[in-house]
Image (cartoon, rainbow, N blue to C red; front, side, top):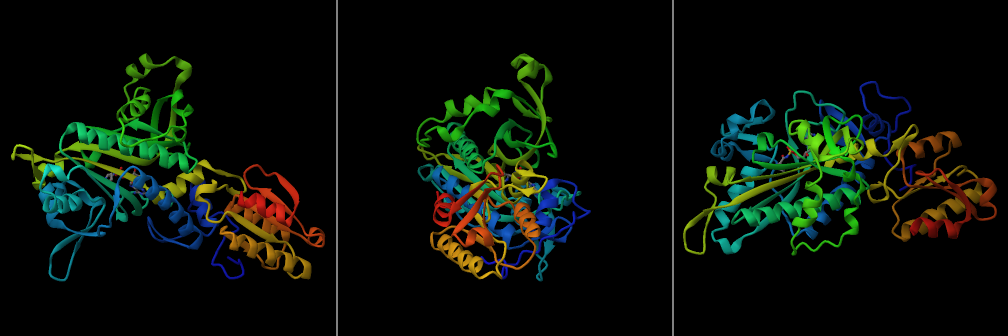
Length: 439
Ligand code: P5A
């Protein structure tokens, strides 16, 4: 993409409404624009990151054996009346009336909708288990939407739902998602710690929040320091085998959010130097709630002996849009964002310091085309302007690599390659620089 054509409305000044780094940087880097309180448009740069994150989430859901579908944003109120949540959910639920005077709502979550589908289509225990997910916009009329897209009113969620025949099978579904979540966040360069959590309006008696540490996080958490020392991507995960040992390696370590925190248990579980108390951002939340919805909505199958068995359910959420902010909270410096490779909107920014110079123009065009034809997402700074401004802009938007072309090097076909993360700069031939970016 050529910056002379790209829509990237960056801001020089810090927007006064932004209280935390990710909100400030997303506005300044031209990723989002507020539409109304807690509701945002995603501009091209932001949309790219959202898509990258969704792709990682999708790929790990599929590997775990979940099947993608797509449910609507607008739901009929009837199914929520059946589950009892139409009244219980309160003012966070955005209620709508259609032209025929029918009660509708903008879905804050989809337990009712999926239960309605499964109860009508799945009749026998032989058709279980089922693990289904979608990535869809949600609406919650939060009292205090804040921190930009971190606590929005409209936000993108991946929500998965499991239907099983009995507790043991439901537990296996829970474990699959538990492991899939560890892998998903690790692929984004995040250390997300699973913590015992309160199940709130979703309900149920087993629940874990996945939390990344950040001073600006809304959750207060307590955990054993060893939680941080574990790389789940090094494990060979076979989702058909028993995942309980892998899951209990985590759940045996003390880790809880403040609502579930038990200080005497915490003190018993760890030497003092292993006890961490910190703030964090909730990027995922999984629930086992048994028959809460299936019972209320009559979702049952016939068992092996012909009798009726109410299905066991769980639901599993990832805050896809919140992750954009969470990743920035974990990866930035004073100059701007530092994208991890896997979610970067572009892999490299080609910075032409003097596009009006013939040699720079030719070399810049050549580098840009070579990268593009090699399938590398490339943003090309081909506009005239001051070098300092171009560098500041590139640092702000935080692409992993900057390939810098100036008049001195261009004459000999040489360029400079800068890593945004380490700040290291190397002077290289054009070919070597391209090879390094591709590697
Ligand atoms: C699980 C999937 C649920 O809704 N039902 C379907 C269950 N869980 S949850 O914890 O309420 O939400 C799941 C994740 O969504 C993100 N999230 C938000 N992101 C941005 N703005 C919000 N207002 C918001 N509310 C929830 C969180 O990452 C949460 O873990």
